[in-house]
Length: 414
Image 1 (tube, rainbow, N blue to C red):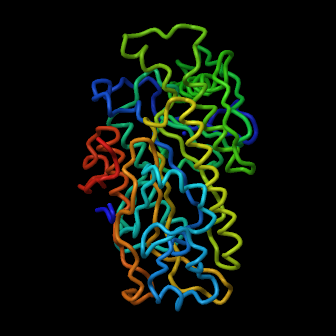
Image 2 (cartoon, rainbow, N blue to C red):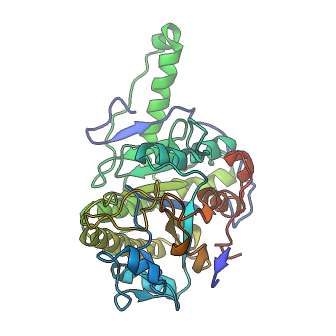
Image 3 (cartoon, rainbow, N blue to C red):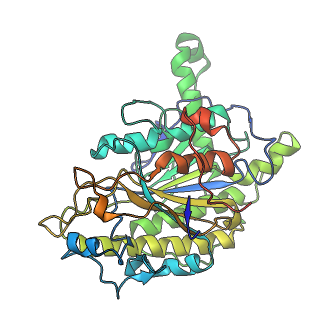
């Protein structure tokens, strides 16, 4: 609905590798239409801790907003006006070129039925795409890649940067974790003696798998002849993570010293690198002194998104990239006594890309209709965002992966 419209035993300290599933699965998506399939990149940005939505996308025309937030509310004259009722936090100014070019969508009211306000449990729900009363082991992207494996020429299913947690790529995806965003994984290949295959085939298989993932990490390091990006990235850990993400893409697109063998389709897709990149911006659990803390975080987010867009344009990947934020939950509408906000339910999320149909989507907050716990009701189930990625973006069977039908959101241009 629219309103106006990635455990290697030889890995270096600070890096982690995880690959429980066999590396050489054959592709099931090679025959996907040209505008779908894993040639379309997904970049997920986790706003860890739960971002306060009401001070991000501000309902300045609702008097109840200022009644609930007498101390931390963003003044109307400070908000960046989007329409007659809605504005953005002033720290998000770097996003305005994206908004004005209609390449930024904001989905409001995102959560799920019977939301859980525990950080651990709620992010588990988001990562596995489960119901609040359901416990699943595999991440939602892991299930997607199990149903439709990425082409064999890809270095990996995905890369996780700046976090040791695999999140939606947990328990099965061919994923590379670059915990230290300032450098690529450094790992030595593991030798698997023939006798080990005879004595302990299970362990031998694990070592073989780890050898494969080390090779994949090698393929994602910068190589001679790689495109040198001109984009200036912001400082800090998040800016460094974005720089690393763009280097991963540049390495994946770099000329290879050894020609890739295989069918013409595999050769054509060998430079794609990965299908997913997951980044994390920490610090959104703003129980106290929220104004300054959130302002700094949103500034990092906006400047990071602006530099990401610039780098993706340089790489020629902007029209084939979908960037999407997510978090375990939002914050309560009413400020607490420490000039902060406590765990709440819904929050807005950002989606950007060259093929995004920009605008406001979802359900705007109606602060006069809080539930018995003082929270906003769910407007859009987060799995609708996932269904949009799985279906319209990748051309997969979203209902099978999500184990239920969720209507995709009309966020993408044909």
